[in-house]
Length: 116
Image (cartoon, rainbow, N blue to C red):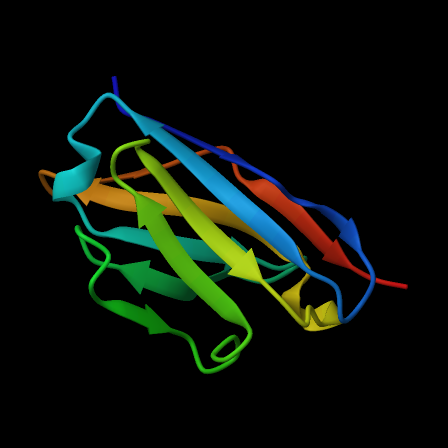
């Protein structure tokens, strides 16, 4: 069974940092691209970042570029999102996702609140 479990969210003051994690199991993690999405209150899903299967290629939404870094540890089957200089607009539930055999999978999400 494919499982993705996000963690690391919380309440942080604007300008602060958080590191999100996504523990993957039930599939060959090292073989798949991984994506971070977020859903802000009252809004739809927004793409945040993508990392390819071996971590050699990363892409970011313009809204987070320069402040957020995606990485992965294939030995630990874990995906990360280092978030710096957080802004109130980053407040959202963050999900890690992947597509396996044309089917999307995502976890339960972890909530990030950037507020003073």
